[in-house]
Length: 347
Image 1 (tube, rainbow, N blue to C red):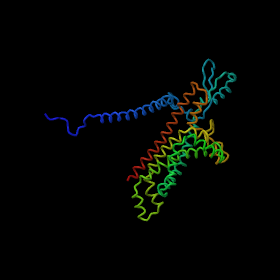
Image 2: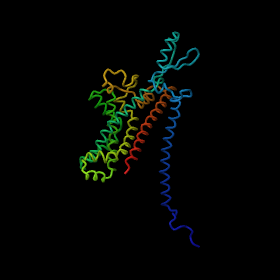
Image 3: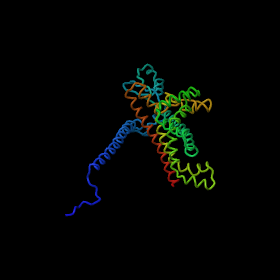
Image 4: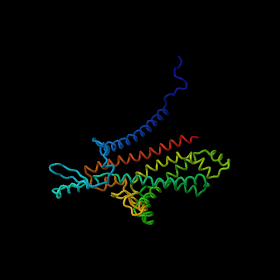
């Protein structure tokens, strides 16, 4: 009787079993990483949701999203437990003279909101990414289009790759020594912008150069054959098709810049600044030379620098929730722009 098994059908063997085991090992590791990330994000989402949103209209905690951080005062008044922010507590004592000597417990950064932190984070991301993309794309264009491959250029590329692995706190110390002390910019937006830009610059340069390399050489040769100059060729026939890859580097840069604490701790972050960066200026240039609050630094201060209590947890998770939402929104905008450019410049 003939064997019903097809001639090309896979037959069990030790090699196939080992290959299947390796496949499931890699698959399990992937799912484990996704599961750990999902647990972390779900925990932040659930706990932060109760801080940012509320059950009563307007269903959004506008105080948390539109005001500056304040101290929380907890006290008993006429048999009721009262919780008030610093401003509200002062008004309450003015309207109730009998409450002038009321005993209260104060908790730092547990009332008010995080609006100055949101504004500071957005400004730091926009400024640093503008500098990083400008310098990074220019450097990538030079390395890929103009520079001749040699010992020095290979050394430069190696240095760029090494800089990508330098810890962020080293960039923070560099920014503190260079921009804060040597240039005399003090703790300011400008010092934070350049420190964060230099930190993310290796990623931008590497990704941008790879995007330029992916553009076919025929685009360059055809343009040059028609009489275009080198710069016209790069501007019209190379950069437009490399933009999707360059925007990919911007997505990676935004995620890193927005989440860094160590560099801004030394160069830009202010513990508490009730005024927004454009308020209280004597000259317009003062806007660049003042410290700002930032979401990652605020999370660090509330989590590690003040005594922990039942009120700090809601601020921590609420701030983390808003922070992740802003990073995701910014990254999503970059992804949408990249997709549109990719569809526009298909080749």
